[in-house]
Image (cartoon, rainbow, N blue to C red; front, side, top):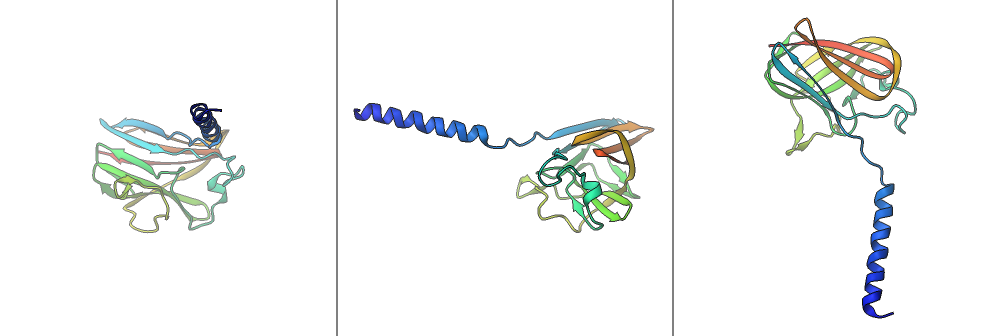
Length: 184
């Protein structure tokens, strides 16, 4: 084989090997967003969607697995972030318009809260939730546990307006956790 054909052969083989490697690499799940207009102000929540059947959970939702004291970034990969054009009233506190990361905290045997944290980035890059935030929370939104009529393989967060409040429902497996906050 002449050197030109040999170079072409190696280039084709290298491309083939790279394409096989990239095809087999796990693809990250896309982030999801839920939004609502509450008292005329736009509010959105962006989050990653872990699978209940993934290796970390093996068919169990985080709400049933986590021991008391657990702090969870409420999603997968990048931290879950809420952004509000209006002031958020939660847990007796008022937060200025802007972005906050959301963390699910298991505070007692039968109680979870969603905690609002001011940190959403790390040196200009999205916050990845590791290490877990253990302090610096600005406010807590108590959650009420429920049982869903269906099972959700992927974490699903819904934000809706109702009676002038923002209602958050987290659905994972056959468990729901719901809470509300005000916007002005």
